[in-house]
Length: 340
Image (cartoon, rainbow, N blue to C red; front, side):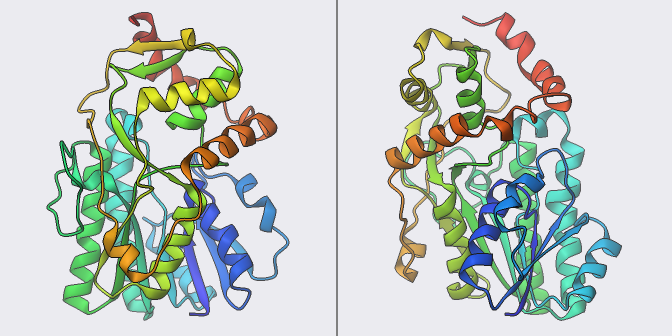
């Protein structure tokens, strides 16, 4: 590997991966390729903007011209695909964008990458492809049972990766990450959303009874797991990447409020979203057997994250305007009016 194309590298997990790779591998040229949708943010890359081995290219993974141009201009030999529409709520409101990026965009990357002669292709996916896991833990060979347009579109992208591995012999690997949190996360997701809302003493709209279970993974551990699979994963294989911290959404909410010194009266139980999966849980023994280990303990990571949002309101306050407020009203206004 010499020239790595990191698609979606200005997003939350992608930028954490880029910041890590630029520092850890000065011998690599890291080319960030991002469409800069609402969730792409050049501020996420400020810590490495002066690095000699970092380049930014604005482009759309669903555009053959954009992808081909970047592959040729920088002689790309490796693709790591973080680019995705990623918020389940938005996928219910606007599924077209999710299919275009998460399924068709993956196909374009694979096909252009194949024609260009790249080496390894790494697809960053999600535990949500497994669907609702009532009990036990999902393993990599379990069948897909996606329940939202988001998870269905991600499953479609994964199946295309498999098809290119089998049909064309491409060197591909897949990671399936659990609920990831940390600094620089767009404040539509639960943890930064509730943290920033609580800081301003605004109500926290908890879906239903809040007893949905998620596995929480700190973003730096997720980024380093992708690095690990990139270098050590077996071609054609998928690897679960989990934090192994199974917690109810309501408990996460209460922890955030406690760290901020805010009252639990801010919690407002609102009508649940459509098709809301009750529980996600993954078996991560395959990746751990390969040699990967997490660094961060959950409570430490949570406290660090909440503190980061307290100290960096310059980053999120300018986001929570315009388009963000329109989405907020569309998603939560009626629900909050009907809150318990």
